Length: 292
Length: 130
Image 1 (cartoon, one colour):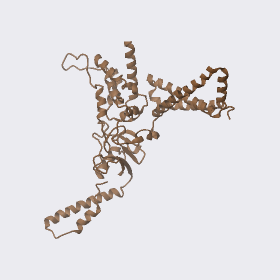
Image 2: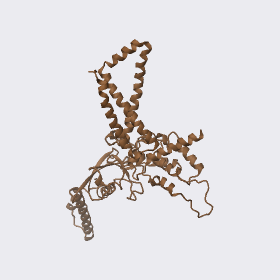
Image 3: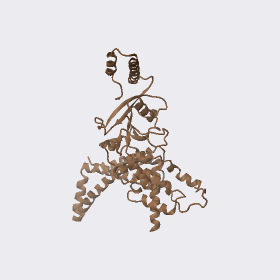
Image 4: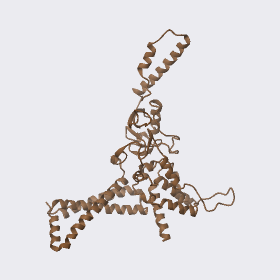
């Protein structure tokens, strides 16, 4: 709570009141009024809110500022409202206490996948997790098994690289003749891949996976799920299908999964990741048996 | 993945109280697997005393069986083997994609079943040991 204005500062201002012109007087008055407002707000925040408050223990770390390189936890007291999410509480803490508190967030409705945090020992989306459902005090940390850039912001490059490495795009064999012709998918097929299309690239699964933590080359649940989404799609071209299978059945592909179900447990969009990985394992076996 | 600073065990096994069922199943399966591999070596060394004749083999075995600690270890070995077998069956079903939604329940079931079998085996293993 470094932004709290210090009491001594404002006091010295009032003490040293020289004979001044009207203009300067007005400016000083304004300044004092603003300082008072700030003081009041801080005092109010410090002492008591009406109603319930929740304690938020937030991981802080900033390698670029001397004195903040050592990871530590800051505690923020936030007024609790029904329906409040972890993200709401973090935004409150940032706006009223410490504007240097850093975290990613964008849509606030579990679509953009920016605000995956480690909340009370589990990877969750900040905007999706109700404070009410958690044990208090709420402990918020950056995602484990990834480099922390600052506070709750982690390096996502590796995750994105893995996602790109399975070629997440269509490459159909033949395109329909007409320029405006649609490439249709059967309803049945749509149902099969429905859950896998929900992925929002938040990285919660990758962070929860023990194997991915120890093996940097492992594609990870999200990337394999992405491959599943295209591999199982009717419209996938047969050549691309083969190529994609070769990517996911390498040594550090599907076979690294040891069915801990950690990813499936934490996925904020409830994608059955383990099931998809297991299905691709079976596909890989089937394909290899065919060649033999 | 490398860490920009050392969060140490906090990121991994320091969190053991927060492990989920699937994670515990994995930890136990690894552990029991290694115990069984270790046991195989002692098993081979005990069996190979029969190369020096029936007499040596018999005396080795009865010597071992007379030790209370060996009897206790046998109960432990049974527990380890039974859990590994039951969880192995669970993993077979997981590999086949059957009952993935009930994977936590099947883990608890294999734990309970292991407990029951081990308790039932205690009289057989420990009679006359103490």
